[in-house]
Image 1 (cartoon, rainbow, N blue to C red):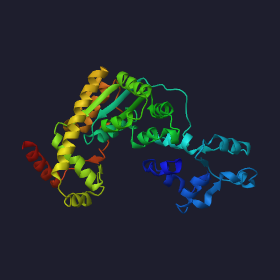
Image 2 (spheres, one colour):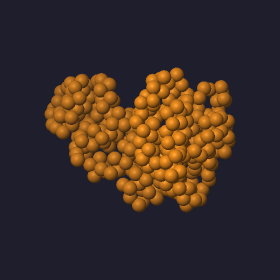
Image 3 (cartoon, one colour):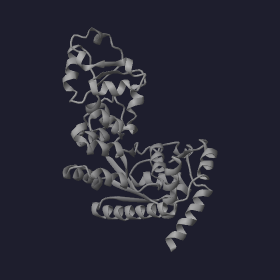
Length: 348
């Protein structure tokens, strides 16, 4: 695998739409030149890295410059600096920032003033997105999910990507600390998939953070409903539903789902294993713990989140209770039917 091929597996970072925006000039070696010109509209802003020396057009370029090369981007960036043009390396600067949930041109700071740290730790389909959104609205920092599949991919192929875990983690914490509060969200399945490609020291660094942060463990009492929610989301491609955002179409799509009881049982078993592992991890960490039951959050999100903010030692922002909850439950008649089938299968 080379960097150009690796880029194709990082779709979640939305690099192609970024470069197709019309704002970027792309300095490419042959590998990236072939890839990016195949996209179509981007091709007319691609400049061959081999033609940089003495290129009179460099001083006339408008907009940011990205250096996309298989080899380390530093030498090309140095040549651009000699022409008075700053640039960003695709894999040395742009990709790490996007993987940290930051803008590609984020101005990196050097200090972290986090006084309150917390991590939402959970399995999937248990309300963590609702909780994260409401905590942000309530003034508890801006928690979001940082340990995502692209990070696993970059770690797995770090010999190609040049990905530096510690630099990425610094970007995450520096870029997402707001008024002294840093929050993140960790889906357990993504943690076990990523830690496989971390070094022992990198795992220790991450676990050390979890040990000193407050763990906000959100879980779902009804694990059958959790498994059904995962099954339906994968079938429909709809993971979250905004109020007023296509409810009728979503309901219709769930009515067309093919039943697969064996898959439902497998998902149920996976979440059971994950919750057991989360409980063990929390005990091993031995730090501060705040537990939230999904069913309580879904019934009264504002009150539950206000209590969570207080437990974190923070103050709920003024006007929070007047804000609308943007997400709505995804439960349909199909969920009920699938839940009944799963319960019967588990009883046998």
